[in-house]
Length: 257
Image 1 (spheres, rainbow, N blue to C red):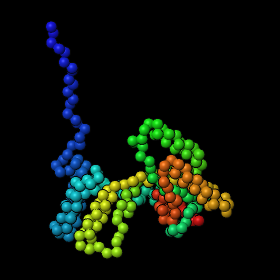
Image 2 (cartoon, rainbow, N blue to C red; image 1 turned 90 degrees about the vertical axis):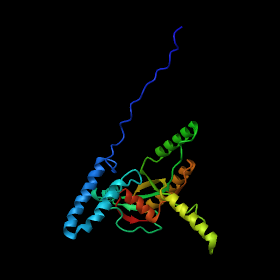
Image 3 (cartoon, rainbow, N blue to C red; image 1 turned 30 degrees about the vertical axis):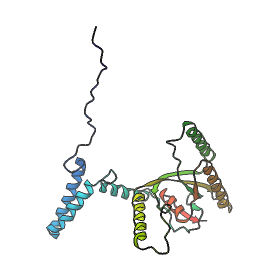
Image 4 (spheres, rainbow, N blue to C red; image 1 turned 180 degrees about the vertical axis):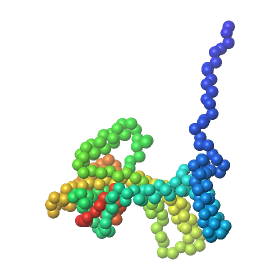
């Protein structure tokens, strides 16, 4: 009798997609940026003395080596600067004046009134397939029913710890005060690096008469009820929250209502 046939064994090669490190630096580009920081410090040291070189050495090393969120600190700073300067490059100036806290709508230079709501999201990863399909169909009907003048701005915002913090008592001292202070610090640290989804739903109508703001307000109320039917809580955008949403889109505000 012949020997039993063993299942074939396929040997996989070692992974080659890992980034090649260069000493303490994650890659060659980070090392090159560090060299540029050191070179800039050398020019300063020529004028101010060798001591002025030390901040460039330490700061350049920290900016290129430390990666708290998977990206170097100087890369994160560059992305933030590009984001802040982006709307100005495109010619949009954003709101030209502060919006009152009670403002519920804003008229843009394009001749339309804009209002909206801020909503969250629905976790769908663990929904049963039938429920996920029903939610998708309901969301599709929501979009089709609001095709005219609807803008969705999706992003993320830091998670607030106000809902899980303890209410401040009249006075705390001793062990109770230390425990409360430790709990508040724990909540602050946990929420500092947590973010939640934020969706600004903006509606617009033509500024063709005195009743435009009222019509827009009615539509915003309808949007709130439709989102509630999808299981998504929402709140109207007013005041500075409306201004921030419009500034994020680079809108030019002329009037508020």
